[in-house]
Image (cartoon, rainbow, N blue to C red; front, side, top):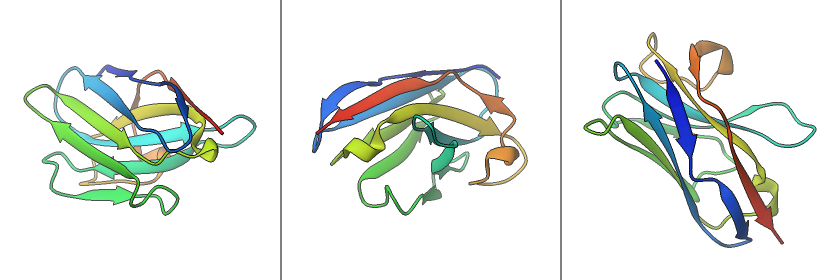
Length: 120
């Protein structure tokens, strides 16, 4: 499975961005993680293979929405009301074993990151 993330950029606080993660191969449960400068990578959002179940980190709940289009084999992360503390490299990941997962170690496949910078 190969994953290609895109959509990052520079945005002002309060703005929006949509990240995309295009996957090759089979459809798996997917997740988004982020790593801010000087910090460990953290879970952001996850979605099951059908798109019917989603999970979010408390820090993004109500502002971010994860979704997927299996016809395009693509997962999205719509990010609204962005804050400077959302600044990070965002990575998408896939895992075939669990219906949905929030733990980094459960993910087998990782895409390259896309940088999101939120200015105050």
